[in-house]
Image (cartoon, rainbow, N blue to C red; front, side, top):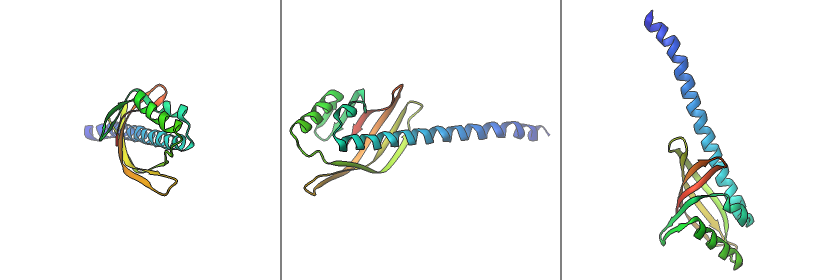
Length: 143
């Protein structure tokens, strides 16, 4: 009888905990997917001012040629835009998102930049996002 009472009391608590955890993961996944979709949209539109809102102030971009700060990354993007160079049309695919605690998440997947001349760049990316009062911001990207 005592065991049946414990099950009756504890099972609903466990189910609420599992359902709540799943909802948080779904929200995180949906939010970060939306951020990545929005980033591709504003990249493709050339909205450099909106791009600034994507990056956390402590952002770092890690590439084969080194590490760039948010300021340096934005200067690079501004220079390409000022030169009128084709930045390519950005898209993401095969994106996976993993929570890294309550305020951080990792997104990784494929990225593609398709240029007007028909060439393209395909590769993998990984980005650690941090939750802020202003939404999820990119903290570290490796590509």
